[in-house]
Figure (tube, rainbow, N blue to C red):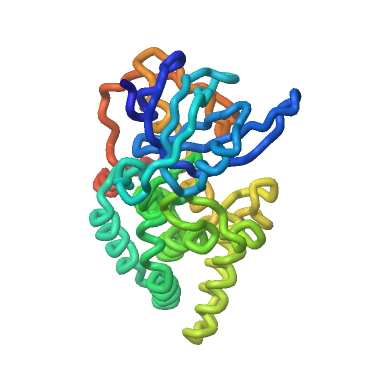
Amino acid sequence: MTNYINEFKEGTHIETELLLNNVTKGVSNAGAPYLSLSLQDKTGGIEAKKWDASENDVNACQIGTVIKITGDVIEYRGILQIKVSTIEKVDQGKIDYTKFCIPSPIPQEELIRKLNIYLNSIKNEDAYRIVKYIVDEHYDAFISYPAATKNHHEFASGLLYHTVSMCDIAEILTSYYDGVDRDILIAGIILHDIGKTIELSGPIATKYTLEGKLIGHISIMVSEIRNTSEKLNIHSEVPILLQHMILSHHGEKEFGSPVPPLTKEAFLLHVIDDLDAKMIMIDKALATVDNGEFTQRIMALEERSINQKNKKRRSIPSFYLSNIKITKYYF
């Protein structure tokens, strides 16, 4: 029997327990009620449909709980989903949630160690004080929350993993490009997504909070930097530089940034953030296919399918990147 989502193939009949991340109700063209489900286990997530949903089906679907389903895996518009036959409640007191939370590829303890190294390496006193204060304020959530509800780093400690990976990449780029203020870049990277500890609900069945929906993590962090600077009596240009990096890190207005990156550090933050998010999406998709095959279409990557070239080749874990020596050549 197929037990985990990453083992699902088109045509597979399944009978398994999955964590319900989200559910929405709808009515078909024929007037019959149906449910759209977002399901997850420790290997990933998948969408599902329950047609002709009964009242019992609706009652069984409580967001954040584990449910038992039977059904068949089908392909719809190039993406696998489950056509659900039955839904049953499960005794939540007997659930081992480690089977349903996607783990970080790197242990949390190692990520925390790396974060502390980067934080303590910030020599600009104002930048260090601001970052240290905000990290301490949100520490427990920062080290445990995902970085998103879907698409990239949507696993426990994903926010921390994403942040440390970006710092690793920044270490390489600052050694290569002249004129980059490393302290400001590292400070901006650490701060750029901490607003998600308020925007998102937590590591299990992650959803957007009211603040997340109405304000968003960018505006949340801009306010945090301003308030923290006032509390710490910091009146240099550092808070402005950091606020600009937060405001611009999505790159364009259509993606949520009210201003474009206008400093070297802000531009690098945007590029590194975008690169790390896209690479983790690609790696996640490639893990589901064999050599020579193409992935399912990745919606967040303009619905592209990526070709698997060499699945057996080991990629370099992100926390080793800072140990790679880069030689600069002048032409």
